[in-house]
Length: 223
Ligand SMILES: [Zn+2]
Ligand SMILES: [Zn+2]
Image (cartoon, rainbow, N blue to C red):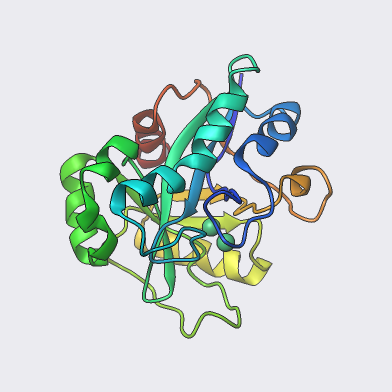
């Protein structure tokens, strides 16, 4: 038995560039045979839909809404999990961070201005996972490609929204430096689960994931 998970997904509640709200993703992923998904909305260093001038508690409440709407919708389905992650941006580069939850975010407003290096130290202490998302992506809004040999635990070597050459370069980089790898779609529109415009590639495990920590262990030890 194989259990499939989407690891990189944006909701309109929280990501300015997303089309679909959290709840809209559940049915198509469930019907595509997935066992769950991670909501990884753009955090406040990236393309957030949240007004950055709001008080911290309000910002986090709004930031988590896409995840919470997905979680509530998933209760209608059997054995479909919704997990929480964030995508933070440093120097124009995106990093998927698995480990923090709403409770932690509420009591740690300093995360908003933490440097990449400081966040990495923090993540190590707490057993989190930092993945460099689509490291070789070239787009009009990306000024330069920054490769991080430090301050990451793994590299996203398949991103469905990337061009093939970008994924191929990421895979070469991860292999050369011995980084564990992940794959995800970076999906912003639930229609793309079935309309063929994205070729999804799930993370696959032979046991179901019960927690974000199960996923972190899976990434570190599977590769
Ligand atoms: Zn986006
Ligand atoms: Zn993303």
